[in-house]
Image (cartoon, rainbow, N blue to C red; front, side, top):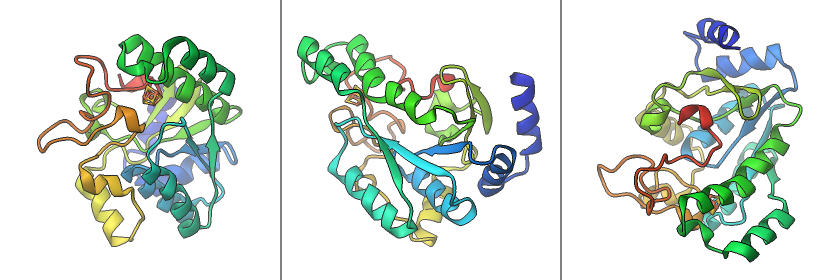
Length: 235
Ligand code: SF4
């Protein structure tokens, strides 16, 4: 697969985000799908898709533990772009079994527990959302973490066996916010309260100036990779 993704990256070396999306939609019509967490980058991508490829499906994973601000933004975004954001939920039997045996806030007890919770509430439903699709579009950027610095615009995701397209990979945070302001893109109000990266409520806190972009995620863990397993290639 590496040879193929290298070729895609070569073809798209001068392409902007919209061109990259159009390129893959032409190659795999109806088989590209975008996962949004409603974060700043994903909101920019939603705006791009609304203009250039409105037929591409958009989905989000509702872990059951999200911030109210995130739920509010789903509705606001659907209204603004006249689109539907498909919401995928975890398997309730798996969640109930986990919570009964390990507690409602199991993630604070160990990294292993946290990964189990992320697996049941995120990775499992992600697999359902990506089923039958060829290209998974994400809002990853190199700048977001040291683990993501080597990510490319196109890669092969081993876990989900799918081509992963990161159209915003080379954009800076400043560029993202400049687009949000100039195009009046709706964004999560938590970004104004010191949350650059927003995940589940019990696992995300605001960061201090100078702290790493993802320092507020699973902040009680030290030394572990600040990823939930959705983006395994970028560890
Ligand atoms: Fe569970 Fe926290 Fe992972 Fe959300 S971020 S799925 S609450 S461990």
